[in-house]
Image 1 (cartoon, rainbow, N blue to C red):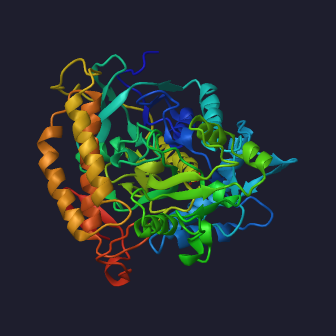
Image 2 (cartoon, protein in one colour):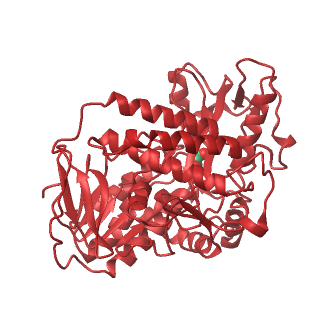
Length: 524
Ligand code: SIN
């Protein structure tokens, strides 16, 4: 079969946990094409370390998982979505185990660890710190047993095709660099996050907000974009990418120390190193600011933990840090926060339905409201599974493609995979710098207004994209504007959104979700 064909019944954009889980659900109802924009391994799922949360241990209860999720969300979770997540999560995980996922065990029992803001040990992990990779392996193996599913790599989805008020397919740049169209009766955006908006991020290079930008261009409602989660502990070395240092390290007892080597977290929160992520990230920023050093630094310290346990529990982190001559069992690890997860995205109902008929979203590209203003650690793989399956189930109701839409005109160049466009790299760098500076962990109205002005000036330079990279630049620019406009409109601090000019909650005005359509942000 040609990847990508001119038509299919169901189209899945993205091959991470949400996309593959949706595809598996759809396979019984018709032909399913899954498009990955690069290799299968280039997804945030593949990089996910810490684990997947579920109330499966004898000491745990679904109600406690729900309460922790709602607490972390800082008043803004959609309680129905959170309930679905924690109630359906255990069943989805049992299913994963049946499909061959090898979670770590103590004897024959599943092993659970703790992460920030969890009241119980409920994080399952696999191969120590390669949970996402193991889940993806098992999901992919399952898709291979279902003959209706084709997974295609290097297929870059550029825009949604909308006719008569409904989505009827997409435009894409194929692996050969050709502009093509693909028709489908329904499309699910499972295209992941947008961490590449920021100078410092734990996200893979593919995380350029493509699904959200495509949906926005098609007039779909986008919500909660101001809520960007910054992971407190990414490796901070001038010569290294911002490699994630899992929260599970702190769950197993690692400390945070400032430049004077003093532990500081209990000053900021009674849960210390295991406080919610937004609290820990801001505490680190504060410690960096108040240090009198020209090159301030904060460290993660595992040196007091059992060496053998650290090496077997965190083999990937151990090996990666060793590449930079840091032996995590003996050396302090320099860290800084980095953009990690977008709570907002394509607004959906509990069945993954977006506001345009025929369009669905699941995983990080979607905003079900399940995470509120701040995601609880290790709820994201779970969200991908639960809501990926739900979106798939709901798309099945539309049935297979009934008739091919007439071929739309494509006014674009024919070959578009290269060359590298230096001008676009410069624009992307400008966007990353200004987002880190003005729409990062600590925000002000003045900085956000400046960011909007700068982004508006960049607009003409990202218009009319021809290459893949130019589309990514256009998408990053679009989602950057969504983030800053929403952040400026939310004149309060809540969860991951912190403004020094409005440092408190304002429940009377803002215990609501932001929704952007066009240039307008409203709260509903
Ligand atoms: C981590 O391992 O710290 C990341 C887990 C998550 O983002 O939920």
